[in-house]
Image (cartoon, rainbow, N blue to C red; front, side, top):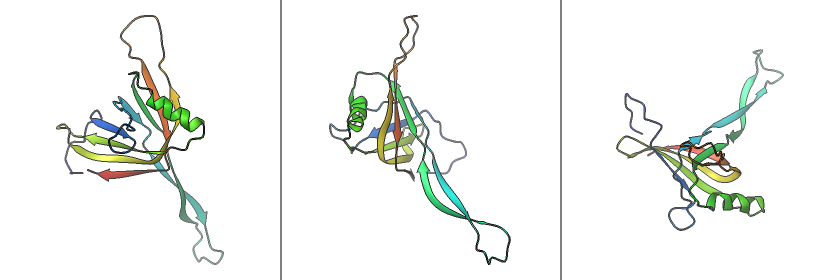
Length: 151
């Protein structure tokens, strides 16, 4: 990632679900990505014979936050099919790559969700009041690890 004075905009990004190319790759024109995060948990420990009277912080397990993807409903059933397969016990983790783009649409950096699986799918809220609302669907993912890479 190049260092620059101005931060990158959060509105140019691409989401790729599944292996590179091929029919298994899920169409992913998402409008929102949220929840990219990782946390390391620490244990407190102190030897009984330590000369200083304080505990040490020892890193142990780490966890990732739940990632939420939102997009306009386009009639592609593969997100729901993936959730349904997971619900029925078919273990099918995917690598999910979220790439931030600069103003010229060149890749800047990426977040890679390893062994991602669908946790929750939410269909659109429908209302007959008229207006210009877009029917949106949401996919909540859990992942074993999130890696951050420069492009």
